Amino acid sequence: MLKIEGLTKYYGKTLGVKDLSLELKKGEVFGFIGPNGAGKSTTIRSIMNLINKNAGKVYIDGEEFTKKNYKLKEKIGYLPSEIHLYEDMKVKELFNLHAKFYKKDTLKRRRELVKLLNVRENIKISKLSLGNKKKVAMVLALMHDPELLILDEPTSGLDPVVQHTFYMLVADLKKRGTTILYSSHILPEIERLCDRVGIIKDGALINVEKIKDLKSKNLSYVSVYSKSIIDIANELELNEYMVDQNMLRFKVTGNYDNLIKVISKYKIDKILIEEANLEELFLHYYE
Amino acid sequence: MLKREFRINFRSFCIWLFILVGIFALVYLMYPSITNSENSEMLNEVLKAFPEDLLVAFNMDITDISDSFGWLKSEGYIFILLITGAYAAIMGANIALKEESDMTIEYLYSLPISRNKILTNKIICGLTYVILLVFCIGVFNLICLFLSGTFDIKVFLLLSIAPIFTSIVTFLLCLFLSTFTHKTKNMLGISLGIVFISYFLQIVSNIAEQFEFLKYLSIFTLADTRNIILNGTINSIIIIISVIISLVLLICTYINYNRKELI
Image 1 (tube, rainbow over the protein chains, first blue to last red):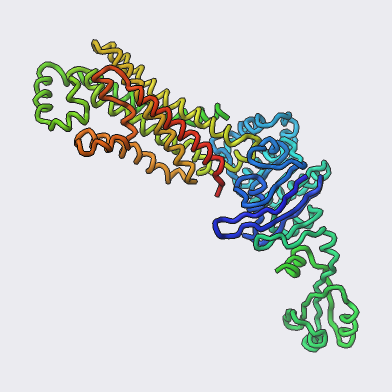
Image 2: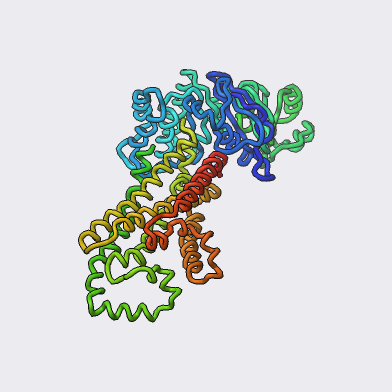
């Protein structure tokens, strides 16, 4: 559905993204994660032709997407990270204007989305809070039922209730077969919604993995409560660990045999073994 | 989209038209009392004291300002050129750039519409309002002159048409320059500067022979005022030059607007 080949973007001499290639299959929800300034927004803005690429091509449904091939945008829904809409208009006026750019009938879907997100249509956009503007932008991105949805930090500025509704909406879109590029630095939501994840750092895509593969790397956090924690740490030959009074906390990847053998020699007050979440996995492997 | 462009720019058009019509209405109301027989002699005495070059600068050497039409040909016409020029400059500077300044451009560019179409809508709207302002003040002057006495209709019509050339070129020049920046506040000073520096250059080139070449740097040269008043014609070369400059600016604007990237 979306294919990026060798995307490169420099801002003067400063690198934005270098030689980034990526392919999203139809109906896939792809998480795009990385720290601030890693190149997520540059990639998205290059895909949308908002900025000029130094090199590389973007294809949508096999067709090259350029500024001239603007009709392909009928297939795309785009939710930018910062929402700026026509403040002089009422919400319904903007929805009506938006609908005129698309050949298909958008009214039914618009009504569904307005109801689901509880959007007030008869109010001026300038009177809306940041969260409500984001909800309006969501309706705009979705009301023409796009085949490809590009979301840049979609939940920033939303309260937890709307966030939850949004997650349900994304899950529903996934069922409908919408392909979604989901850029975020909030890893739990990527873990919850996405099939695959691409990790971008310093302008380069350093890895693409399936969420379940990343989770199967078997990283766990072990917390041992004992009076002999220093001896345990020494015997386990730990490089990285944290000590707090009688508690020792450290990471374990895969091999638990040695851990059990060592701690069985000591008197243990309490032991906790927690599976790492995506955020912890991300920090462990890519920082 | 075009309808929206017209709607959002309508208010500023009304304000500019109100200012322009207001100034002229005041003059037409007051001018008969200023130029009654007693004051007329005094006015002529005052004008005689003016340096010749200054009279040339305001076309007062070739017009008789003892009636409303005379005033229109000299000072009135300068007002029209300056105010319509300033409106065209601000309109040109703002019309495309405002989307960037307000950051609504990211939304607009995400829609299935070409950049050429976006720009064309804005140019159609801008040019319509600029020409409409010149047209409206022309109609207002025509009505007032009919009511206030006799006047040379041919010279009047040519003088009323001429600001269209300067306004269109000013609009397109400022629009073109706006494609190099991202903020309207950067362009406001530049656009008004172009109008007032152009006018200043025109005055200097009229006053001092050694600076006559400066008229080639002034947009107001395209108005061809003195020729209209003296000969009752518009120099066809001026029209051709205006059209060529406009087309070059238009093409360059489209090229640059399509290349432009958002910050």
